[in-house]
Amino acid sequence: MTGFDKVFEGLKVVELASVLAGPAVGMFFAELGAQVLKVENKATQGDVTRAWKLPKEDPKKPWSAYFHAVNWNKTYLPLDLKTPAECQQVLQHIADADIVISNFKSGSAAQFGLDYDSLKLRFPQLIYASITAYGQHKPKPGFDVAIQAETGWIYMNGEAAGAPVKMPVALIDLLAAHQLKEGILVALLQRQRSGRGCHVTTSLFDASIASLANQASNWLNLQHVPQKMGSQHPNIAPYGDTFTTKDGKSLILATGTQKHFEQLCKCLALPAIIEDPRFVTNALRLQNRDMLIQKLAHAFSQWTAEELLSRFEKAQVPVSPIRDLSEVFELPQAQALVLVETLPDGSQSQRVRTAVFQKVDTM
View (cartoon, rainbow, N blue to C red):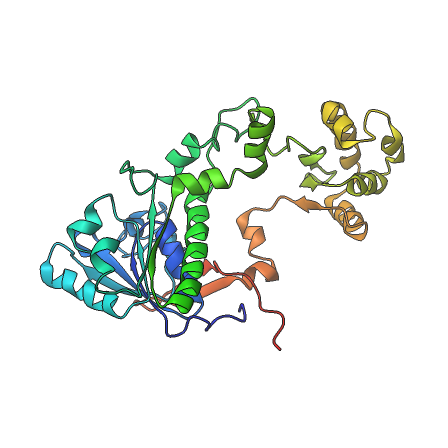
């Protein structure tokens, strides 16, 4: 529970979107109390992710685990927009809707009279939110992995000696979804003041570039092209380095400050490293990273993971075990973020919340 679970009660959202980014926006509003109607193309068996199944999934069921990820507490409307009567049903729902979420291919929305220009005169309070791959005026189709490749993510991701790799989730879709959520919230505030809706849009490409953060600024200010470094950090050492303990567990460092580094060395019984002229500053540790990692690796191998994690926690040193998802969802904090839904066949589906902020002050 966020404390805002009913904040959008009474808000109506029509979702004309599929795959991940658009539906993630719809689920955000569903989690917070809005009525979300998901229109799916019945001529193509609905949202394409219904068929994106792992080999272990039942091929006869009309949904996949992937589909469940961002489709919780929605009302599904299987319609064929090419049928005038069914397209009219969508327009009837839009007539009293607050928000339309769209990720139509270029030109397709206008074909059905479901683009913003067609709707704004009839429904001036409507907020029309759209996601494209490359922007409103570039019709090229695009999926997450293609955008990751084009915007630098894949080039700089992977082990130094290995091939470049994509992120293990469709991260750009999720980043674009967050951008569109923010745009819709601003549009709702503006509508409260002006009484008028608007068209708010974002693209996968823009969301990807906007999220490059320090990697972008390293290039823009220093012309430094980030290279594959595994999980290591280009600006901090040791950070992102992985070590194996005496009992074969993997721990990863996130020592972002000088104090963290000093406490790390004390926990590992390596006080001499703190004063070693090769490692006394972050800049020197970056220059001598390989030598430092060798010394730390030997020290980690002398302790069990439980011993080290206990010491690090007491000293407030950010070091974490590397868990797989079965281990992650054994954690009570992770379990608290799971949403359950009963499906038409009586079985239950699960997914994680997308709205995880909390209201603390209840005054």
